[in-house]
Image (cartoon, rainbow, N blue to C red; front, side, top):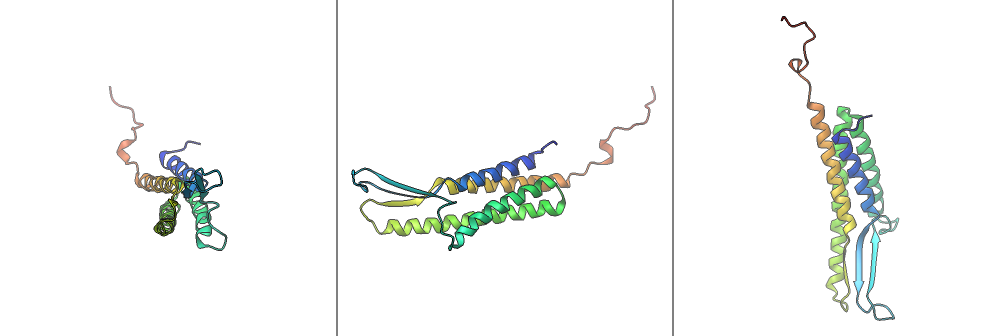
Length: 164
């Protein structure tokens, strides 16, 4: 089975989204925060960052599932599934941006307390997932463009004998 560029981009994008979910999404550090007086650093991945009672907990899981569904739709190459893949890819991006904005607001709130050099921030894992979702969307766009290419009758060689 030959994998085209759209399918490959969709697969890679989804894989990047999934990998990003397990990287740090929220970070916190405090110099001198432990008993030895050293740097205390804490981070949580998108997978572990939210309690099961928060909406973000289900949104992270939904982003993974939707990314997989979108990639399958790109591989199938039917017009309805490809259009759906593009819409689903946009939904994954919207979910990740929503979560990023919430994390950024929480980090800003924590930093506004100015507690002894303690800082909180958004980790790089959310950015990795956002980049993966953009790759997934690009795969959907390529798949839609690939469906619109219909070979013309003039592009196929003629089977008739040519006079010499």
